[in-house]
Amino acid sequence: MTGSRSSLHEWVLGGVRTLYPGYFALVMATGIVSNALFAGGHHQVSDALLGVNLIAYSILWILTFERLALFRQATWSDLVDPRVVFGFFTMVAGSDVLGVGLHLRGFSGAAVALWLLALALWFVLIYLAFGVLTFLNTAHGANVVHGGWLIAIVGTESLAILGALVAPGLGDWQQSVMVFTHMLWGVGLGLYGIFITLFAYRIFFFDVEPQDITPLIWVVMGAAAISTNAGSVLILTDTGIAFLESMRPFIDGVTLIMWAWATWWIPLLVLFGIWKHVVRRVPLTYTPMLWSMVFPLGMYALASQRLALAADFPPLRSISATMVWIALGAWTLTAAGLVFTTWTSLRTRT
Image (cartoon, rainbow, N blue to C red; front, side):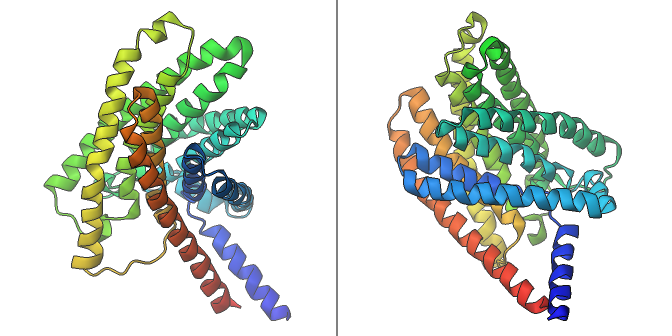
């Protein structure tokens, strides 16, 4: 019995030490599927996923703080590694996506608190991550084709979305926050323009191996989808500021272009997966990065729903209605993989 407890303790500590920095993508994926289902009127399933998400969010923060306390060197190594530092932006996006889910249900105070937490994390990570990328990356270091760098865009746009939603309840701060959310939307678009250029150049003009095609590559579509979502939210929000209202035609056009761009990527990303797992016969196994594939599917569903409202174009709702069930199916399979992998690992150690 004592030996079993010791093995269990070692197993937990091992998991904490090697905790994937981007594991908050689980919160992002669960939250966005929940929010998309809520927008589609499927409130019971949405509420169940929200409950799962609240538990996952709490557990991941406990594990993160435990890792920081017990394995500071491992945490610091990830923070200064250009290959993984952008994974920490999942904390930003996960907090915002959860905040949107709570805001949809009337918990405005909790939504504001999560937005402020995400904003503080973003200010730290945005300059830390790009400092690491500038000064510590090498020619043989981080590879943009992995898609992880684009999570910075997802985190930035998620701040714009939740910020626009909570701004009306912030009193004297409302107009300042609305201007700031428009700025964040623009920053996200600028970063996307930089990274998508590098990404396309790398993937279309250099050799690509199966190990280059990871689930993170789906973030290239997810970043465009969340930019669409953010733009749609800005269009649907009454800012009360003449300067921002004058930007509406620009936001309208760019938002539609980003949705079209996200749509264009989906068949190609599916083709990449077929090439890796069918043509090159690489087995499909669970990895935490799979949550970064589920999130773009859910985000595309919600972005299509919001764009349908912003553009007053109902046909987009049918696309959203189909994609949300695909996203839920992907979430279910990934969750099953997580449970099976965790159970197998636990049985092996104990």
